[in-house]
Amino acid sequence: MTVVQHSVHIRSDGSVDETSSLPADWAVTPIAEICSTSSGTTPPRNMYDRYYRDGTVAWVKTLDLNNSDVSTTDEYVTQISLDETALRVYPPGTVLVAMYGGFNQIGRTGLLRIPATVNQAITAIQPNPNRLSSEFLLATLNYRVGHWRSVASSSRKDPNITSQDIRDFNLTHPKQIEEQRAIAEALSDVDALIGALDKLIAKKRAIKLATMQQLLTGRKRLQGFSKRWVRKEIKEFAPLQRGFDLPTYKISAGPYPVIYSNGILNHHSQFMVKGPGIVTGRSGTIGKVIFVEQDFWPHNTTLWVTSFKANNPLFVYYLYSTVGFERFATGSGVPTFNRNDAHSYELLVPADQDEQAAIASVLSDMDAEIAALECRRDKTKFIKQGMMQELLTGRIRLI
Image (cartoon, rainbow, N blue to C red; front, top):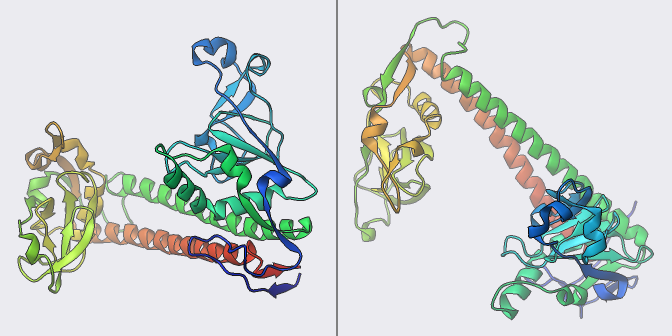
């Protein structure tokens, strides 16, 4: 395979300037010229037994779309629904686009790998197989998702796109379907790597969770430790204290980070707390626990640990992560963390400081491994974005 670079102008939203120079064997064509489009319907829900119960025909809704292959659906419809409604079965290779359902749904795509019907919120696109690869079309639509959102937000009171918007979409593509397939395959290989990393990260997280459940309860002991664990209330080994209040104009500068319940936002030079420390939200983000290594200033919307009472701070952080502090939320409207209830909550704690440190070290190493995998995955996604910009606009050719 030979890679050839070619110049084309890309707008800031990722779309192609159709007036710029494209390779001679590329074209800009409205979807309607090389595809057929249609949409489906939702059979009446009040006739569930007739149209849905024991259904065997896949029925795709916007929530089934994942910007990738669609091989299963959440719901199925009956053969009778095909006979008595406007539903039709689309073959594998059909590309689906969500037309409405909020900005998180508009423009979401799917590529059918099974025969399926669709609801009225989806446009089904069937490419002319001699002119357009379904996989190339899917990749382009995913790359240009911002286009749909701009159309939806600028043209209508209730954000949505129409089937006509989709038919009018100008598709930049190589005329040779072999090149389309080569581009789609290259991007698919990167997707496979991202998917494998996602699965590995999920597996590592599950292993860490299981390890926490064993090590932080004493059900599994690390080698070399045999001293007993003791049951203590939170107030006995790591009590919580509310943060300070401070005028907004003072939250501006200083060597110490200001900690809110959702993370580090700013700095200030007064009311510093010696790190390490733990912050968990009093309201809004109740249950989220943050470990802070350096000295910090806690904002009044958080609770923080003022004294670890000879306990290992990192161990306390992991232990706190298992508590589920949201259970102590009280009050109507916006619930607030009830510190008194939390203080009376009992946990098992190793009496041996070395065992606490060893457990914290094991879990910290697992966190570091997960963070490294997440970093690798994010870099791969960034590389893919660059590949899409180059390959789907003709700037770099695979010939």
